Length: 174
Image (cartoon, rainbow, N blue to C red; front, side):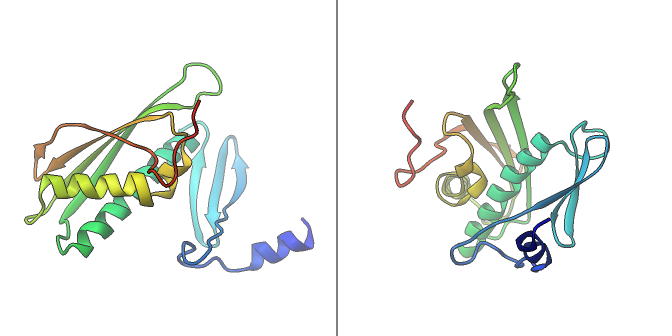
């Protein structure tokens, strides 16, 4: 490890690294088999390439998009003074059968409960997250088909095809 790496490793990670002109880092330590401890400082999680004792890297990616979008949705609805009582996000993906087995489709279901929430309001919060705020969604390839479905207070809404990038950050043409 170089001196620069030692300095970076000993520098405490900010609690919220998305302020200002953000840089983000993570550190992974191989433990055994295909199991790693990954994260920053004391904020680590186990990631298992075999999916036996912990989520796999791809499952971790799905968790990242679900929680990234979920955090945005909660933040947007809270700012509108319609705080959800419950939010669960189910993420389902299909992958290419051959290597590299990249994601081809993403389906996210947002189960939201709250007395003041309206379906259009929740749909708009999800669209804002996917199109504008969610770093993870914006990082994924623009050719991935993404569909979201809202289940509001137990009532399933129609699926919505989401645009992965806004006009200010268009997907590259093929």
